Image (cartoon, rainbow, N blue to C red; front, top):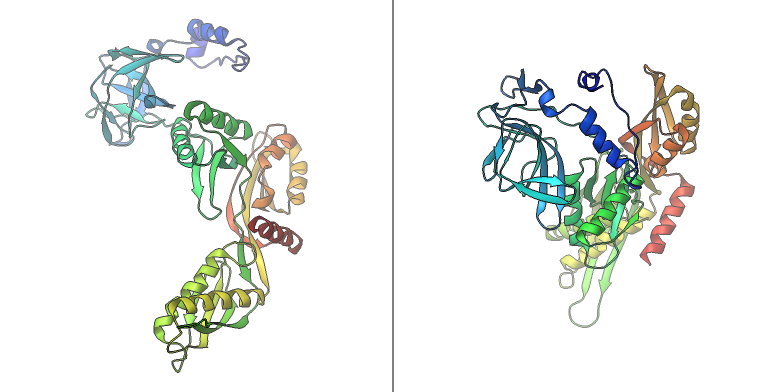
Length: 452
């Protein structure tokens, strides 16, 4: 059996449960007794980064040093822990290593052997050994480290893209910084876990391979860094725009003793083509508004555009023309014209047939043929449009569709249920489309309620 495994004619399949401690010891014993040792492997194949040709290393300590980083851990006491397997040559503590993947040289301190939670100092490592080093700044999972004058790159691990995202909020005030730094450390451990700040919806987003994956990482965050979080469905990045032109004026005038406030503007709002962006122009004539006040009007307009009018979402694809107005030689000011610009825009926007836009995703679903009918029905129920179906080998088919992002927040669960765990999907932003009126009304009402 050992020879068959070594030549890859036989692949063992073992069953166990780490969470229930079932058969874990049996697997360890099986690994030792049945799987080949590192010295049983004749050569390890890599690529010469200079020539892009195949080169080989023998599992011999007299060969040039090379190793592959397969894991990174975040230790709350010693920091980042980089774990790698020695493929060839030898490595000693308190020396320098060369990261061939990053083209960087780093100094290592104490080499450590890891057994469970125990870290034991060692003086050197030889082929087949799995060792750890603390506080490497450049080296990450899937990197190759080696002798600088004998470079080699081993094949990188290809990690799947995350399929589910959640918004993270702290349970306790003041934990934001601890959460961000802790999640960044955990992201170094797990390349399938992503963290980013979405400035448009103003939420910290975590992405992973599923609900359980994210929950496990949040538990690890609590255990290692002492912070607890609340997971929520991320907000949708809706946009606002208009469907017709409108003209509106606003006069900001206040008098309460002494110098007053006066700013008077006329704005014309026009819709632009989708993805054309926003623009502010002025067609003033005759000095109706002094030139030095025009930037203040624009600031007010841009503030309204960024804050939104309907549901607090950014306004897109609109042209704003400042075409007339008036001023007062004493009472006019930058602030007065900024307020006038902001209020004129908001009033005009509501008269220009305003609508909400939602992100539409290109969705690709791959599953066995016998599930495709149910999957297409599910996509149609999510306001989706089927673009086509392509047949692959092994009785697999790919469904291509366009679906609103708002309908896909739990799609990994729906796909697993329909295809019994035998489907996969990916999606990317395609474009923005108008939200149906009955859905837009709910979004606007919820926005007003949360803003109260």
